[in-house]
Every structure is written in structure tokens, then in C-alpha cells.
Length: 314
Image (spheres, rainbow, N blue to C red):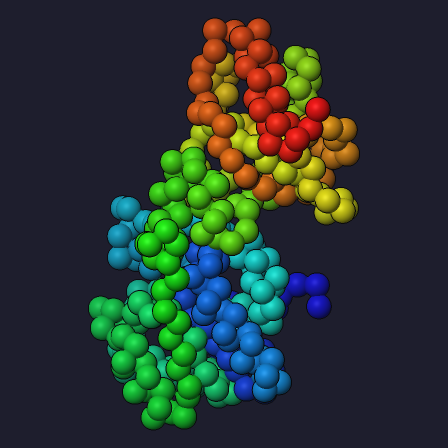
């Protein structure tokens, strides 16, 4: 199977009758801490010939509880599914997080799950998992209720990095600061943007640095600036070294919405309409307004040289 099965709501999930090993959580970013939970579900399912699935929620609960200040998501559902598929997850169930669902009592959660997925055999969560109305349900209650219904409950301890727990909140702060190298260490993979190449104003081409304009509109915007990247396409075998700018392009236009522009350091095989993935490796410098096109050209040449040095290109 080339893609993960996806379902809108557990009541609509056409899951196999095999034992269901279900990882539950938002899993925004699918970082190393999340992988401890998800990989436990996958490995257990494989051992018993069961199904490994993830139950996540949309929108983020903050949209219900803090509508004026909702949590900005690192990753959309399409990319979450892509990463989960790489981890061996068989199915992704996206449960609508509605005001009615938020009122479900903690003691009713497992019966709610079992009613919709009778084949449920085990639940996998992080140690800080909370559930039910008012977030009153904790791991102790989940284990006790699971035992009543013949379910195994696995609680993964938090994963630390540099002495601090890995969390989506910590990664969001790093991305907003532009520190993608540190964020990547917590992800366990490179932060990426995926989208089609769209037509641009071709200014880069006129000053000697042709760029790919990538249609990409993340919920959580990383810091505006220039980054060392790799660029891959659906048909490319390897990701090509490059440098990218993400921001409002203040020197040539004061754009309303930020734009991601990627410049491949060697020959660029990508064209308008191609779907590309830009993997962010390192922050080079913040976006700034230059005095004119010539100063911009000189700075881009420096950016390109610095990026090339990262890849030991001459």
C-alpha cells in the first residue's frame, strides 16, 4: 500500500476485524516523543497480526477552548499522514473535536471507543495524556477503565533531549525562532514544506539566481529568513542541495502573504506544476530589506556560497 488509510471519525472507520492497537493523541509534528508511542503500537500490532492505527483530532482542542488564541499547528493532516505511513501505521482516524465531544466524561471514553471499534485490543498514549470533560482523565484512570474492558494500556514516558522533554510546544518555539537545526533534532527528521511549483515574477532568474516558488501556507509560520535546504521532487531519486528564502520579500515587493522560494545549487530539474518537498536544514540569516536589487544580488551570492559550503560544493 502506497498510502495510509484515512477515516473521518471512528464511527466511519472501516478497520479490519483483527486486534486493533490504537495510538491516541494530537501528535502534531510526529516528533521523537510521539514516535515512542506510535512505534510501540506498530510493533505490538505486527507481533499479533493486528492493525496499527492512530486516532487524532481536528481541529486542535484549543480552537474550542481558546478560539481567540488557538494553537498554531506545525503540520497539516496530509503531512501527518505521510510521516505516520513511514512509521508503519496502517490507518489514521481523524476524530472531529466538537463541543459535544469535549463534554464526554472521562469514564465514558473507553466505552465510547469500544462501541465504535469492538476489535480494540490496546491503547497507546504518552504519560501526560489527558482526556474527558475538563481533562479529568489521566493514565491511572485510563488503565483502570481499560482493565474493566479487557484492554491493555501502554503509557510511554516522555523523551528528553538536552535535559528537557521533547514537546510540540518546544518545537513550535524553535521554528518561530528560526532554529530548524534544533527542531530537526527533536523531530528525528528534517522539517519540510511540500507544495507545487507555481509561476512567479521570475526576478530571481533576471539576477542570476532562478528560484522555485512553492505554494505552501503553514498554520505555524517559521521565522522569515534564508535557510540551507534540500529540494526533492516526486520523480527525483535524491534531494538536491539548495538555499531558500521564506518571507515577504521586502526589497522587491512588500507581499501580504509569505512566499517560499527555493534555489537549487546545481542544475534544477523542476518545473512549474511539479510537486516538490523542501527540507529545511539550517537557518542562515533573517530576512531584511536591501537598498536595491544589486545589494540583494550580492547578498544572495553570499547565501549561496555559504549553503554550498555546507554541502562541500565548489
